Image 1 (cartoon, rainbow, N blue to C red):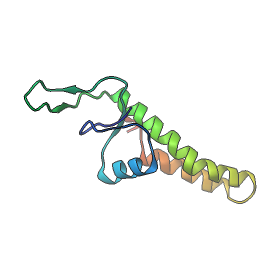
Image 2: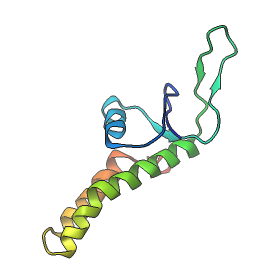
Image 3: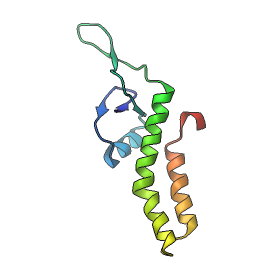
Image 4: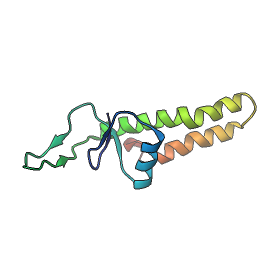
Length: 105
């Protein structure tokens, strides 16, 4: 499930609004397929134990969404002669720069 690493908020479906908010607020998106951990206090607090692998998977899912929504349409325009190859490559590179994998940072 899409999860904000810093506070444990979870989302059922990734969309542009979620991606934009995380980018704007410099929050990290992770993909977590396990229950989150909380303290055993009267008012439990979220424990951030999200792994680098979960962050990388979140980044992979963000990139896949953005490629599908942003760079793929430019690719199709390039194939029809309505855009340049460089416009498509620039769109792909912009996604990679905005959402780097931990292993690439």
